[in-house]
Length: 315
Length: 257
Image (tube, rainbow over all chains, first blue to last red; front, top):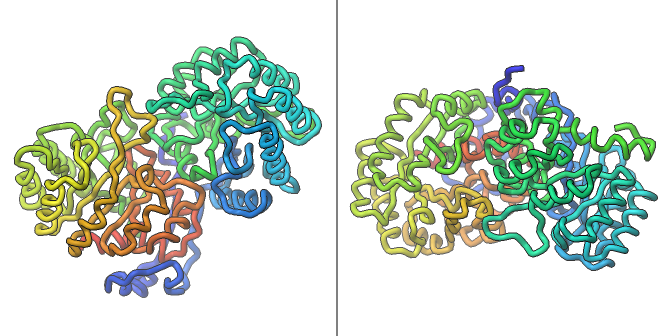
């Protein structure tokens, strides 16, 4: 299917000339206008807001950090408010707040409880992963039992407390795989240098070799995505998460060319990242609509289908 | 068709990869398809080339011959090069550019350098808009042989207070400057920022808490970034039609007058 990169993102917003002229005098006069001082003229026709709803979008990478709200529920509702404006159907969240790069065992429980509170009553819109750490193996295994085996969560989040090459990660991955859970491993190859416990895509490759049945997502495409994509290219078991980096032109095209569209998974890293900037990576990519739909939702749905079936939910 | 003015695009080649849209004909087609009516174009060549006069002549010619009435050239000036004043003069007098684009970090100076102050004076005398790129990309993704620090804009406050008629736009702002730090420029009515590197959910709403709407410009950093990133940010925030119009066109029109 041939497709031009811009055809799926004709986003329109219209204002009549008369509406503008009615208020342009203030700017022409050099007035400083704050949000609260804007004139309240009514547009003649409603604005056309939001991108076209031609794709079903599941966001695989969201957090409760970076969004306002006193409670987990308030934060979740605010996140969903922004997601609604951009026609995002479902969010996957993990980790609470504030971010803790090397959380204590107690902090893991506290943050997972925040996530459980956030998804309660919103299960039709939100899925979640359990936050674990190889630094606290017993707690992590217990949290997997509590939150996945006995709870609503569908995946595991490994961040930067220890690298994927850590022996303790093997136990976590074995248990997650037994439960058919998705394993999301944050990765970066930072020009400025990684954190001591920060994995690279090559660490995920090593993990995949040890656990050929694990459902692995290589987070952030390794940051330096030209390297990350190459690193995982020969391992079809590893999917590429594209969230949480600048909306650099060419990432998705290279990923589709080298891995195939069925290995690329959309996510945002909201609230720290903008939903908009991350959606643009897919909307703006020079790939066809079938490939975009795979990336926006279908690949994640396929990964989650086995565990959702165990919970009596069809994806 | 409402006006949509993109104040931050670049022509030619990014030095470290080919970008979809880095052929001018493709770039113009994509911008027009998205409804862009005017785009302020710098040149990636301005980052490293020492023959800046040649870069600017090519930029002006490309905008004229391939711009289809959309591209407006903003020439590069590097005040660390001998004879930079002539480059600035040509931007104004020969190429009739409305402004210039500076890359202090790629050109190896900070904003306290005396030549930078002289450059601001000359730009002001010629009524040129001065765009200052604080970044071009995330520092974590720089080529390992080519790490470039972000520009620290703090010295600008005193420089602009001393030059009240000068119009300055910061582009690619928010990897160098947090929203909270933006408040240091609150007393400068002619300092503008673009939204290309604005991140976080509802980013423009957050930005409006810090600065008035008439100082925010639409800028995409296309083709390095996807154009849709900036465009979708207008939908992610709850903007009234007046705010939308100000950001997408009227502020740029006012700035360029």
